[in-house]
Amino acid sequence: MKKILVLLSLLLSISSFANNAQVSEVKQALNTYINAMKDKDVSKMINSLYEPVFKLISKEQLTTSFEQMYQSNKTPEMKNIIVKKIEDIQQYKNGYFTQIDYIAELELVPPSEDKEKIELFLEIFKATLPKNSTAIYNEKTSKIEINQNSKILAIDENNKGWSFVAESFIEDMKQSNLIPTKMINTIYQTDKEQ
Image (cartoon, rainbow, N blue to C red):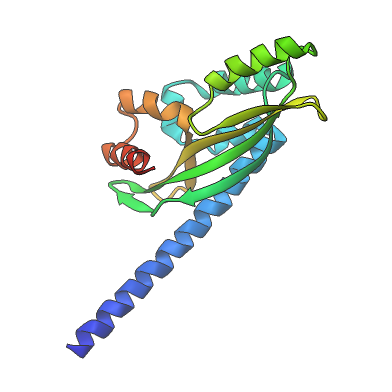
């Protein structure tokens, strides 16, 4: 009996070590992705995405969209990302996945200097944010400060390294059957728990 307990303890330790190594790999890949967003490095951002995303929109189209968005100066500037939680890494048929919950801290220059127009814009803008997100106008900096709650899916398929699916793509990928059912069920289960 004692041998069985020792063996079971050893297996749990090995499993825990492997999971910690995977979490470390996820964090490293996520930092690369976050830094690419902060630096507006479109190429690195695109290279960090889960390949099936490009069945929804081609790499070329997505690259062009990001480049135009950044050139317009009408997009919020990424200031920081605070990782709230990395869910337990789970295995599926072709590899591993996890969901990462985070807060993106962003700044946006309002489209006008007129106080009434800023207030109207801010009210409309707030309606587009995910729940539990905030946006306020900072009169000292003349910028809108945004704290956007979001999630991202991290996937290591066939040991190719961790890649990501932004929340904005998850529903479309689900409807197009481009993401395994187990991942979808896990994502929506954690949403219910929060």
